[in-house]
Image 1 (cartoon, rainbow, N blue to C red):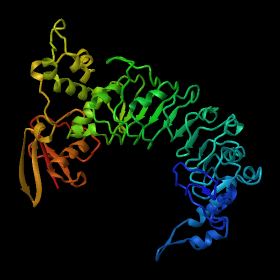
Image 2: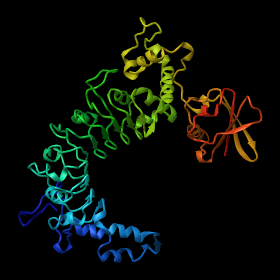
Image 3: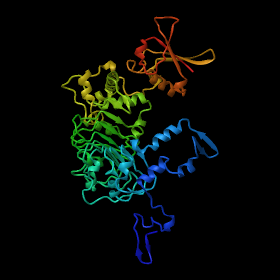
Image 4: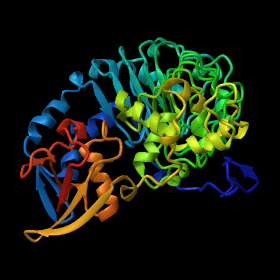
Length: 479
């Protein structure tokens, strides 16, 4: 329906026919905050009707008994002791009587008010102003009107650290809301192509997950936030990242304090965007899973090495710490793998003749730095761009049968990244070769110096060097 009836326009929707007329007795006009809290935490009689009595809950035709449910329920009923309260999707529409919340929930610090019937920011103020030490407030998925005057600077938010505004249709132009008063983090859902001047100046965390940004250039609109340390861009649809103010090998002035960046679940297909991330002066942690560029390398070990080598200051990749030995191995391998390309592009061992092309430097901006750090690769080190698979890394493998179980003997004079490669990573390589889950693989090795003695590789987190595996030793794989 378009909201009109007999010539009168009663309401308007974003879509011409996005609304409906319903009878008042079928509409839910909501409840006050404390009523929702008491319903959620079992202080009203109708709770027993819904869930049954005692320690049992009925799921379909089955009754489930929860051990210790009485003590948990009793603790939750003491509202004056609760610190974290959630009334998500409880039809909260208004605050209720003045000061009643502060008397009943004196110690509350974290409130989840998401997906309710709150229609105005004034209702949020009325609830929050009764919570003395409010630190976290989630009002996501409420279709609200925001104030035209600066009411956000109320003392209700003096201790606020996290504010969630996902799917509230807020825009950057709501500067009264974004003029936040203290140390805080904000999760914002709606994003417009309007530069947020003079707002969010103390923002430390910004989550734009699930917003469809037009392109990576929209990031420039928030690039000057002076205190932003963490930016989450999961599933935003971006396909490229570029910082045009800095040449390769230089640092951008954008995002000066950004330490943690999440770009997973996007459409980034070119390695040039990963090269750009090396321009961020403070970047230390990156999440980039589920992007098309990752499919260009069949071997995850190669993929990780390339990302590490391309971003010099990175310390954590996809929630895994990058150890110094791992970085050294990645950078040395990168230097060798692209050595032939470097020579063909005009690179040379003689510094006076070393003039690689602009195309090569654009594709490998850190290569000159790696040559300065480790020296230019010797001719014998150049191995070209070969697929880093188990078959290319191991000299030989010979299938045998032993006691009815499958055994592969792998001589290992050139196991990949021996210094830092963990047993878990070896199992990952074996899985891609044999399609046997790592949990079913049992690894051991026979030393060439200790005939007849077999050593079990029983700790997945230990590197190969922990077990003193040397060239000529034999790794046995059983399942």
